[in-house]
Length: 208
Image 1 (tube, rainbow, N blue to C red):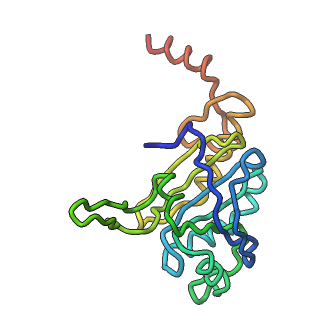
Image 2 (image 1 turned 180 degrees about the horizontal axis):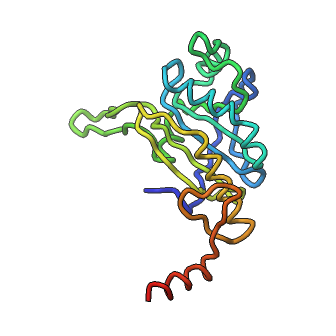
């Protein structure tokens, strides 16, 4: 089920921050910042580093909008650190400075509905097996300062994201919060938005 309109699942987990420091008890900065939380499948792969570098390239744009970027995968914090210490030319993510969360138990991915498989209990064998891929889909969540999920998208494993779209969506969320207007299709910052009551009445009258 979608998390949009609901409180974001909270967690405390190990993470690498600032590209070089492991912290054991990282948590979402609810109440302090808007949050762009994104999941990716696996360290040391092909599409994933392009996305992490793309988020880093837009980091200043998110910061202008009082937002933090946080990445997460089902790898360990040690794997994250090794990847962060690997150069971009060698497929690494050296230079990424936002937090990268370790979800080795896969519980965070499960809570956000992005785990590409599931644990299954076999009654005959009295054992638990994992069916599917033990990694996260490319899920992206925008969480406001009240801890409410305002946007959610989940891409299949081979499909990389367009990072500019999350900047646009964050602009739209902030515009709605500030002006109480709604944002039509293809809206971008600087374009005209709509007054839901006034424009809705006008549309009804013109149709009738």
